[in-house]
Image (tube, rainbow, N blue to C red; front, side, top):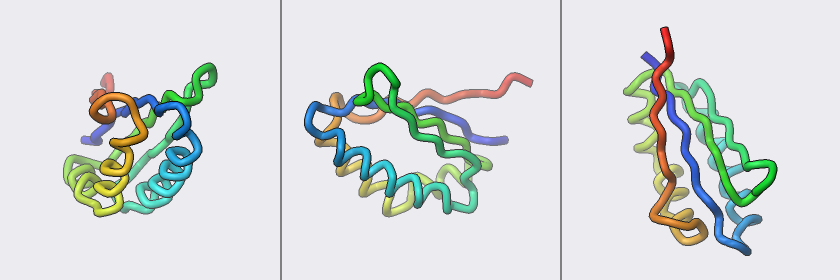
Length: 97
């Protein structure tokens, strides 16, 4: 069964360009993961400092591999400063079957 979620976070004023570059780099890495099915980062059209990232992984093992990757850990550590709150808010999704 796939592991599906979305992550949301808000970037502090003045940090938009650096976070956008961080997200571009992370996207390249995640999309290259063998267990990644989808990784689509977005900003809200009306509020470009608000991010929404839709993610799908092949299964729980693929997700575990994703969260254990060094580049992901580095991204999350670096993201802590330029965003509001304690980190990304994750919402887990289940397909309707």
